[in-house]
Structure formats: C-alpha cells, structure tokens
Image 1 (cartoon, rainbow, N blue to C red):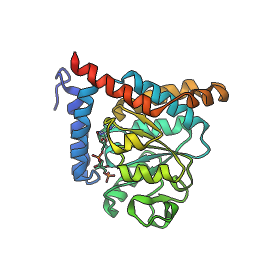
Image 2: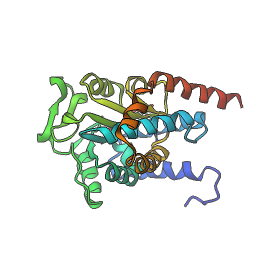
Image 3: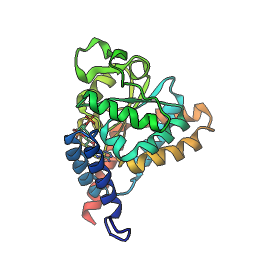
Image 4: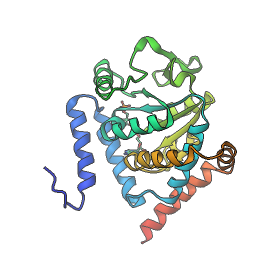
Length: 246
Ligand code: PTJ
C-alpha cells in the first residue's frame, strides 16, 4: 500500500499499474523498460504538460475532429496506465480503438480484448483474420485491421515503435504521437508530436476536444496549417534545457 502523502505517490501508482499488468500477462517485459525510459523524460520536462505539448494537443484534436476515419492505437503500456482515459477520449471524438502490439502473442491479445470487453468496448486489431498489410509491406510492423487503421486517415499512437510510425506516415496517414522523448524516431517521424505523459495528455485531449468540437471548421483548418511539428519539437527540447538550468 502506497501512502497518499508519499512525495512520489503518482509515479509509484503508475509503477504499480505497470507491475500488475505484467503479472496479469498483458504487458510486454520490455514494456517495463519503456516505462522507465518514459519516467526519465518525464523528469526532464518537469512532470507537467509543457506549453509545446498543449499546442500539439490542440492541433491533434483539430486534426482528429476533421478526420473521416480516426483511430486510436493502443499497446500493452497504454492499456496498463490509461485505458479508462483512452475510452473516454474515443467516445468524445467518436474514434475507434485498435490494438497493435509490438510483441504480439495470442495470449496478450486475448487478455487485452477481454479487458476492453469488460468495459463495453469491442476493440479492433484482435482478430488475425481482419489484419491486412499496409501498402502490401510484408512485416509484422505493417499490419492493421481492415476496419480500422488500414483505412484510417488519422491515427493516434503512443509509446510507438519508430518503424511502425514510419510505415503509417509513408502510407499517407496523419500520425499523432504521444511520446515523452522528443528525440525518438517516432517523435520526429510523426506529423504531430505531443511530448507529454499519456496519463496527462489524454485527459487534456478530452477537455480540449469538448471545447474545439463547437468551433468553426475553417478555424480548425487554419490552426493546423499554421503548425510546424519540427518547430514545436524544438520548443520541447528548449523546455527540457531550461528546466535543467533551473
Ligand atoms: O506493443 P507492446 O505492448 O508489445 O510493447 C511495446 C513497447 C512499449 C515495449 C515498445 O513499443 C517499446 O519498446 O517502446 P520504446 O521503443 O521503449 O518506446 C517507448 C517510447 O515511449 C519512449 O520514447 C518513451 O520515452 C515513451 N514513453 C514511455 N512511457 C510513456 C512514454 N510516452 C508517453 N507517456 C508515457 N507514459
């Protein structure tokens, strides 16, 4: 039992969720390492949503609202720490949720599918028969559900592998990545990169989605056109630098 007044309470609770997911058999063992890597970058950005992340969130939501077939992609880590928040966001944005595992095993797919079912959600990507290869690329990184990412115009990914992000971008889909590491291949490859922890980013996305849903479509198009991901990533790096100087 972690005492609520512990100075690292939030961080310890997340670790606990990661440990439980591993014990339940749906978190990849490398998922623990990925989480630790994320913790490091979260320290560096000050464990808060930085200004450049708010900007990227706003542009992401505008993009998701204007999308014809938006899909939220989830993996073991995302499910372990942010499943409820992801479901809430998908409802506000009317998005499908698709499971995409780097270390795909039948057992992990079954467990995660069951967890979503218990929350009333049928996720895509769980049935092997529905998977197609994006652009005919014969690689496990290129599979997507024919009813979801395969046909999607906008895909939201988190803790994503660089090769996968590259395949999605090259296939003409708009990729929104939530990644605490602004230097990762995924962060650089994505069209919009939110340098933030998914546990903060997703609830903020939901709030902004509620607000932007009522805005004029031309306004949304304008803010998207004015955005440069490269410039925004530079701002994220600057925020890390200035945080370290303090
Ligand atoms: O698909 P699975 O479940 O089989 O497993 C996939 C993992 C997560 C193991 C795999 O994708 C992986 O190894 O990821 P990487 O290459 O370690 O990349 C994870 C990226 O996500 C790193 O840049 C981390 O900094 C970042 N990250 C970690 N935790 C968070 C995060 N970004 C946002 N929020 C987090 N909580």
